[in-house]
Image (cartoon, rainbow, N blue to C red; front, top):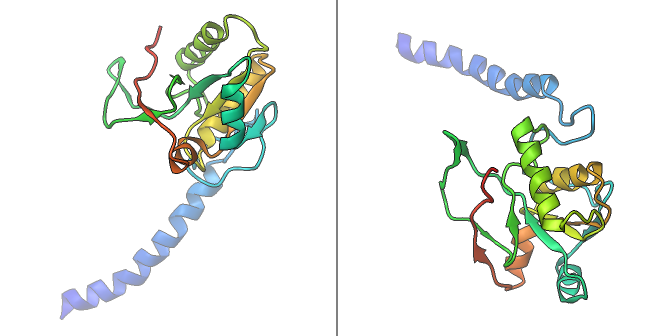
Length: 185
């Protein structure tokens, strides 16, 4: 009987703690950095636009890819980084021809990831900051929103944000390829 009574007395306390914990964490943890990058809750609904880039859908991306100067496709999905290497925890697919720059869409980048991002953007664009670049991840993913914004801050001027990402591409029945992140230089 005493165990049952103790359990019944603790349940309201646990409920109270569980209800307060997310609110307390949210109050302590801002959603955006001072310079406007999304810091937390990366897989949640995204806005319709991002400063410095044009938002595109699957049909617009297909037109760009068929155009005179096809864009560079940049997948920014995360990959665990352990002991100085990417951990292949599960298979990842992206749009054929994409450059996978893992971990560059976080709200705050350590210098190694900022250098990684700048290095591969320069390489992929041939140093041409007006070269069209398309950033994507999955649908409802702030990583590509952050990466688009970050590329604009680096001076790239023809930027596109494929907001619905690989999920929309696959739902349209379009091909994907097995992907491996670009190595850290």
